[in-house]
Image (cartoon, rainbow, N blue to C red; front, top):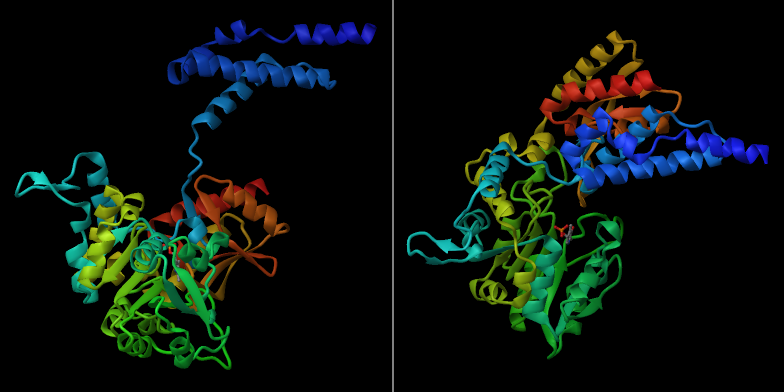
Length: 462
Ligand SMILES: *Cc1c(COP(=O)(O)O)cnc(C)c1O
């Protein structure tokens, strides 16, 4: 009994909601968050305090209840999408938002977001226009295709193209090209959603032109090639070239579609990487439709590009799915600005993804050394080691770019990495052989200061 009344006494020591609401702190929150949210946060903080007393703890002070209420209010408005510094060395990191955008793209997007635009308005005629005219001229010129259509993302582009061209009919695809992209999504599943029936031919490692030819029937609508962008089969392998597929398709009046996945306009081989097939090559080889992503090697906003023959693109443009997959005005602004960089031959200077690919290892060594110098001056055990960056984003699997990395030897690499990730901005390093590594290739030039500060904060906390 005595215990119970002692407990009650301790519960009675807790301030009331009303009293806490009258404090100057709470009155300040009311101005920012309003009466209702503030009261709710205080009530929840008091509930938590009561639970702790019931669990046998001392009565929390009014100040600590207020601190808990404040933390609740701040969590309420904190964005879940936060800035992150990518120190992993994976250039197109899908989990970290793929391509950072060029300055021109960001400025164009800001402009489109701020006010009204002629998104679907013909300024010369003063009548309704189409959102699908934007970026088309640039895409035609850059790829050599007759026409182009931009949708929300490449999975959408594939879905729309197959829905328009092959619903209810057969699409022949090699077993070696049934790709699963990130997040458990399988391209064949997306394709089936179009209503097309996939006819799989060949084996995992070898598919011949004869395999395709043998599968052609009255039901066949098109031959589909999917670039195996995120894996590589080596050894005893064969896939017919796109040109061979085009020839076979033409002789049977079938369409040829090429899903390039990443899609690049520049030759990756000039940077010591394997040659990733370019969009221009697919168009020149005679593909009727080519689909590719906007935010992988293109280095622009999330988008799906479809380029190809005029009458096919025209049919896609009026398909009901186009409305469901439509591209946003802010994205269109960034897309045009990004494509313009290619037209003006300034892609490797202006588009971050290409600038990262093109940066020589020696420049990265200098940056890593500058970070290490600053960290060592503050007592951090930092060294610079040789390492590798990757392109990522489901492109150029197994291909690496030489780099120099900042390496930290810490007692608990996982704990240290977590502290970095929870910082503001978040810093995402990689861990190898119990060392925490930071690759300057993917850290943007203006992030040096924040990176060093973040590492110092995590170091002093550890
Ligand atoms: C990445 C990829 C896709 C999907 O592109 P998103 O723009 O992510 O929708 C489709 N096909 C291939 C081969 C890919 O690599």
